[in-house]
Length: 179
Image 1 (cartoon, rainbow, N blue to C red):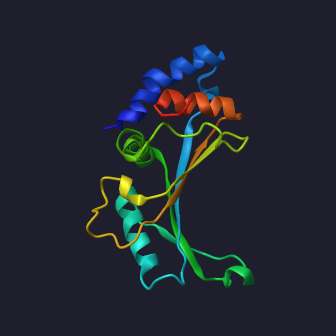
Image 2: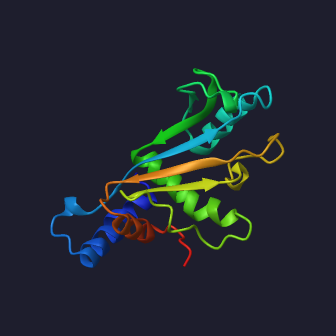
Image 3: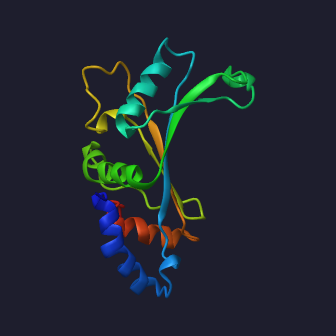
């Protein structure tokens, strides 16, 4: 069974984008290629903080995260090459659409004083990044079991060539942009 958001993309978003942008070929219509969820962790802050972040990110995404390591040493940050600095998960296909659906419908509205996400977070090539200050907005996280708040970065990579095309795609998919 296909995810609900994928069905919406095929049945509603593709025809709407074709009429708005004047695409003649269905392969010209932009699509979401992948979603990368990243949690950075200070390794010297607490014992076990990286393991907690890996466990919580696995609960949120439903996939096992990989541990990311520092590429080079930076003395001012007391960071050494090869030191664990966080974890990340790359989501594609059905899992990606299910995660985006949960993010838009249940997680983002749980942010305190939520008025929409900023439409200015595009990178110029159709990729949108959002930073979340807290992992407790996801319903999968049990509030009794977390020891500290951990933020995360979510990057949505699209096949759009411009930010306007990507904005239209995400807007039609139901992303709650602010005015």
